[in-house]
Amino acid sequence: MTTQSQPNEASPAAQAEAARQAILKGLDGRHIVLVGLMGAGKTAMGRVIASRLGLPFVDSDDEIETASTMAIADLFESYGESEFRDLERRVIARLLGEQQRVVSLGGGAFINDETRAAIGAGGFSIWIDADLDLLFARVSRKPGRPLLQNPDPRGTLARLMDERYPIYAQANLRVCSEDLPRDAMAAKMIEAMAGHFSETKESTHEPE
Ligand SMILES: Nc1ncnc2c1ncn2[C@@H]1O[C@H](COP(=O)(O)OP(=O)(O)OP(=O)(O)O)[C@@H](O)[C@H]1O
Ligand SMILES: O=C(O)C1=C[C@@H](O)[C@@H](O)[C@H](O)C1
Ligand SMILES: [Mg+2]
Image 1 (cartoon, rainbow, N blue to C red):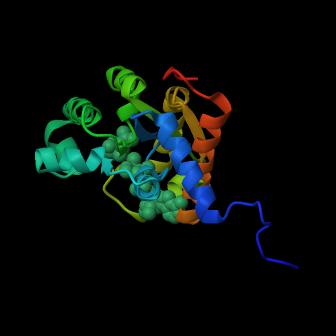
Image 2 (image 1 turned 135 degrees about the horizontal axis):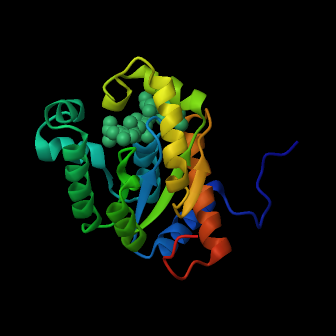
């Protein structure tokens, strides 16, 4: 068995750089915006994708906490979900107006019509899809998600899947999250993006 590359086969580093260039060209200055349910891995994967593509990273939940100087759980408790959603919409509108970045959203942000329209104009959205078992295993590791602080968090996640998946499906690209190490999941997402831009030769920013 040989492990040497064929003479005309690009090295892994050259392939990664070619994928990076194809993605940046396809983005044409737009943000990468990660959407999906709690536990899908938007925050975790957003960081890795940003580092691989050489783009800055920002997480909308973190920005909301910085802007309000409150934890999200406390915002929900003190002001209620509708005030949180209003702040979320305004914070994301600001982020979308700033430099190109990888933007990981909170799980409910893409459900807002105005936010979704703004992302359609200035972002390339990726839905990280995941099944209920994986989502539930992940959110169970860390408490603090106010929508899941009830006697049936698994049932709540299942209900949110029914309500939100038709809307997440409006994202430009869907990638299925698997129980993969982060590096492997990042490679899968990068391959999906590069494939999307090479296959569609997307010349407009219309959702598919
Ligand atoms: N591919 C992965 N491999 C291993 N762990 C992962 C992976 N993706 C996510 N995780 C872990 O799952 C948990 C949830 O991930 P993360 O916080 O990124 O979800 P999220 O989609 O940002 O959720 P939220 O909407 O609540 O912000 C974290 O502990 C994270 O480290
Ligand atoms: O799915 C949701 O609605 C939420 C997800 C989190 O990212 C936070 O934005 C908040 O806990 C609400
Ligand atoms: Mg997150």
